[in-house]
Length: 113
Image 1 (tube, rainbow, N blue to C red):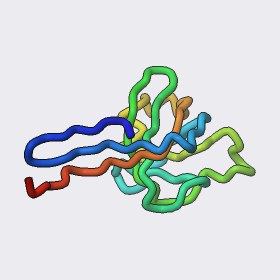
Image 2 (cartoon, rainbow, N blue to C red):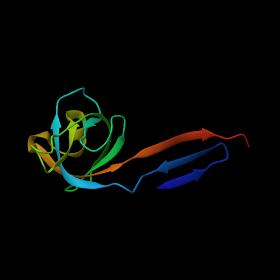
Image 3 (cartoon, one colour):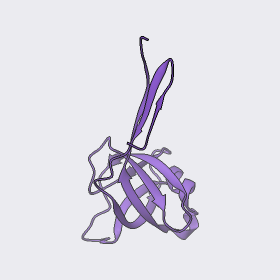
């Protein structure tokens, strides 16, 4: 658990799975104009925290496709939609060194106190 907040009216927790973390290269593609990505390692619907290792910028994406192909691009670990890539790097660079890790945020849950 990354953080927990106990408020008189609600509880909020931000969870992060530290079990799986990958470092490698991210590329970008034009797809749906969203914070989404393609991954060969994670199933569709998985939320990932992607961190640019050069500048520390981060984006949370949802996996909605498969790729990049490992046999063609062995160093690429994720393909980001252009919208997501622009949040962590300049698209003119084409590629960016990144760390990818599962991310889950649990929202505010009301309590009956």
